[in-house]
Length: 139
Length: 222
Image 1 (tube, each protein chain N blue to C red):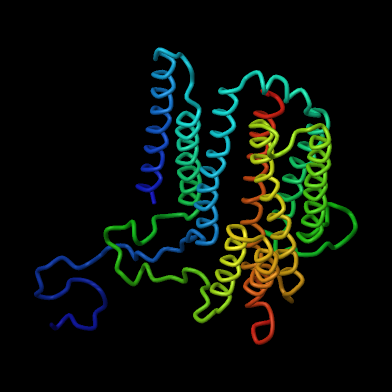
Image 2 (image 1 turned 180 degrees about the horizontal axis):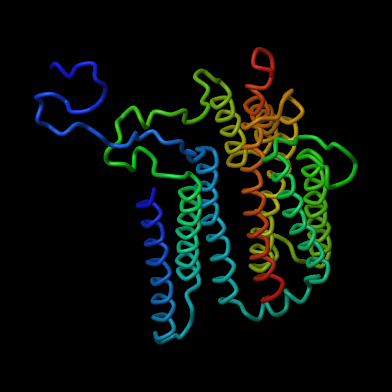
């Protein structure tokens, strides 16, 4: 995690420097104008790197030690924790994907299709969100 | 061999060093994959809005006189009030997160000090909804003054940037309802419900910061 954090800080510094050089170079050029697309993209790439580096740094200082995957002496099974809850058989993601495909199809070729797709998107999102909150899984 | 059973000590005739690393399995707070995933996704959202800002700046540098003329139509005091409403919704959202972290889903009294996550999130929802309604009112006013999506490049980029932000706020409002619904769906509010409350607060703060950027660029810098 420490390496990840440092890499993102490094990337952020690189993009920050690039933004300064890029903007300065444009200003020194014949036209003396700022080329906004590149400048904004580079500055916000620096922000993106700093954002991730800062968050990962916070996570690392909160976890109270090194993760097994960052420890050279760790065994494979030390890094075998509960990673989270993943449904092994849910149909909702593919339902949502299909509904979204209808919406975008509608945007591309005829809005009326999107109006059919949108309620399906809502059904899929609610279904997915509450999959483990109702029926057999209610708690 | 005769030392067998005398407890831990010298390991007989073996000459290799015994393995004496400290047990690697400390008690760790593993990074929550939902939260890390949300942050990484918000990172991609930064770049999405980077594209919108880049469109805005480059169109403005192409047509400064159009900007000087059109941005005079903006109702800055109105938008400032709307901005303050959105910023205060971030505060109420964070109060809801503090309650969720204490597994306090519902209020124990009417006093805001004793509010649970649900009450704070309903208040956040109301403030966010006022913001969106204010945006729509502002759009209606501007359209009546001739600034539309297809009127000129100023209109296009104004509705594009603020519109995509408004869509994000609206999606956040739906997400708040889903998180509130989860709090009602369970008998005991636990870690998973708190996680969804925390990640939506990440999203909400992000959308709030993007609006502060947009407000500064569109309404203050003009």
